[in-house]
Image 1: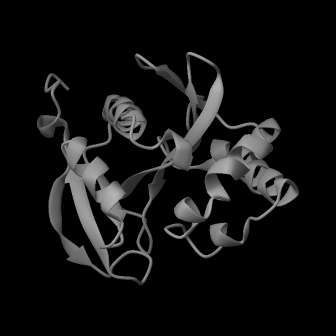
Image 2: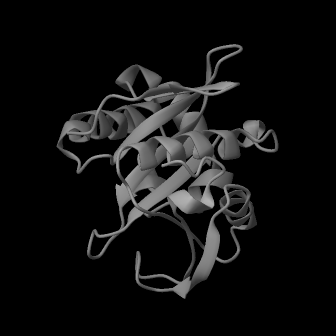
Length: 182
């Protein structure tokens, strides 16, 4: 069972999702600039009720995920505004590798929030015993690729192993992080 998560950074709180987050979550996952990079299922979420259903599924699935997999909300601490989502999940098709991914509302881009939340998630995952994390991005998703690099992730190549599409793969291990004591 994945433990409930509440991590605080300098500017953010990473916490569990609630179905009450549907309207704010739709501003993230329903934004065309975000949705274009998501899985086909997520690209169909176009209204608050559909988003509430997705969040309900995420909340219900959370206790049954292989630790430390999970999905969490990113909240700006200064005003309590929900600005993004973050997840750790096992990558298909073999579910051997943990993927870190993040999505931010477009009006929150360019402030370093994805990097800040990603660093906190990386440290938390390594503290849970994960030995390496991957991030995958479509070659034209320059924002995701730049964030992976800012997180200290190493480019390990291009692959079609995950999601049956050509992706850039990045990896980080505990020795690659500033806190190498883990």
